[in-house]
Image (tube, rainbow, N blue to C red):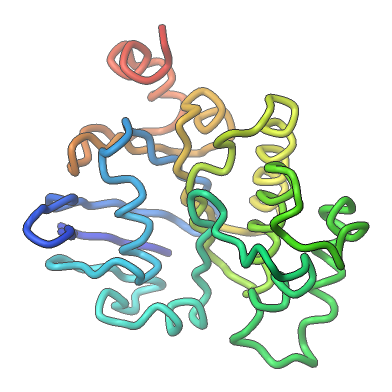
Length: 233
């Protein structure tokens, strides 16, 4: 579904990605592991189109998209849940969800709105509450729900468990697993390597802007280098 070849991207003169190559197959959860500053968020931003690529190719369902504006990538079926949620905090929960469906006709979104509220009943009870008044866990649910309103086939999740209590982390990871079972393809950036690999099919490790390892989740969990570097073992 997603093929990235020799991707380079940076900020001014500072190159953050040095020829990254990654593949994601339809129906997979692929985890992207790495230390802070390794290039994980830059890679997701380059895929979604908010960060320009300076070289290399990104193909989605065999269509080259690396020169395509971000809104066209959304229309093709790619949605990102950004690090830090980046909600429209003065707006209500429902308005945030409706903005997630901005590429679609208003008459088509009622069923998806109901689906998000069924997935996250807490948001239904707070649908008229300003997003900025929600707890961290509720905001993460809303950020995922907003992405779902775009009807994506590929979801880019950037640090969904950041800053959440363990019980909420479990709830978010359970939701990610349910999305996969519903047919969603997911590229997951997650500092909690144990949790990410527990639900992923495959994973990549990125270090200083380069892919340093790529294997099945089980193989990464068993790799002594990964265990010592990312799993605290």
